[in-house]
Length: 375
Image 1 (cartoon, rainbow, N blue to C red):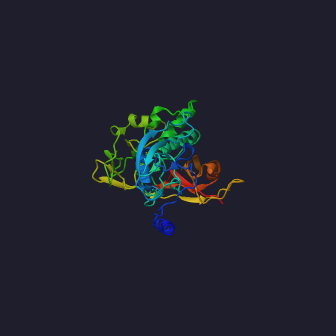
Image 2: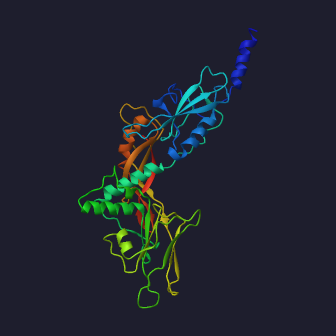
Image 3: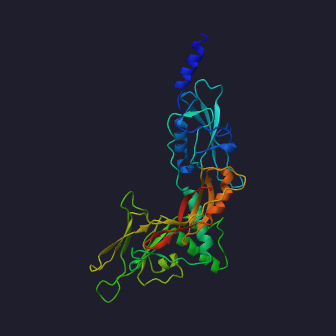
């Protein structure tokens, strides 16, 4: 037995499962609130992403795990930190006592690993999440109010060539910016942190112009339809607006007589949407106008400098931000990666510039998640 014992130990060690993911060497990782595992996804997707993370875990010798959600920790009462931690009780056969794991629903780490003492049966199937939609909405609204208070933004052409021959479109950003401009002119600037209720509504406005259809006088549009190539038709808010009703939607804007407007409950058109404008004159008939989007691109992204004394790392810091109509980075917020580098990453992206997304030639504000690496 003295000979077989060590030999058996070697055989068992050779048969021990190899983890399909990295394993943290920090005993505090995922087992303390300050070192929660960053799975991300926000309110809409975090639950599914947490299940994928936990379903991949195994005990140190490949034992299947069972887990039970205990609930969420209360958010920061000051509102400065958007982090919400979900608490899970995790067990596997032979564990001395249940483990408590904390998962971060609002941040994501590209180098996600298993807690110490665990392994993975399969790699984590967690792609980096896109921008959190609720944070993006708040950030876009804040930029619209801040910038709209001091500048005007030209509307978007309905025609892909930018001519606006058939009309214009104002996305949610431009409508909020116009409201902010009007409030500032009246001496009552809007507060981005406490916006009026009307600005909380997501909507865009399509304005169709009258057309000459072979006769002397322009013919006013009879109907406006936003057609969806995929999915449910977008919801329109109210009836077609003409005359005074349209003037109330766009106070102070000079529009051709006979113009008509339609409000839709979207922040902007979708890529495959088309506008259909019908005219009562057969010479004009129905005009179909597709939208032309052009992707944005980075122009200048100088690398972030590693703070003095900080250990080198290849883990990026993730920053959610808004690219404004001028291509500048606005409203950066830490969204994952090494928290000790968050401040340096936020400072770095403010120096970055980009070519914004364009719709029919007009720049569009866009929420993005930027991975920041350190040299």
